Image (tube, rainbow, N blue to C red):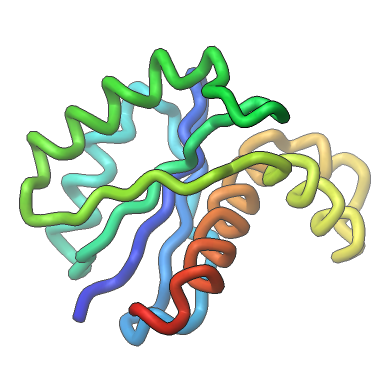
Length: 140
């Protein structure tokens, strides 16, 4: 059984989180410039076994897709073609950035470090993964 990896896709940066091999504990992995994301994933998949990729599904408050889905959907299609052995799933990412900022604040991260948007992206990916695991607890 391989890990589950989650992606908080952004136009400039993308946050990435991954589970442990037993799929129990999610953790932030890194944030990469989006233009290097596919190269990063190719390298990571060469070192680690990953079965499922969870991509944040960008929705507005009313449940309709946000404008960022115009970039996310083509990216997801490229993932399916490049990594046909991986199951690709979309998962609602509403509120993850707000929750991530709150979690960083509550963790006591210093003010200058809280301004690091890459940290917020990585924590957001972790929150997406944690929510995904919780909602699929009985089926994983």
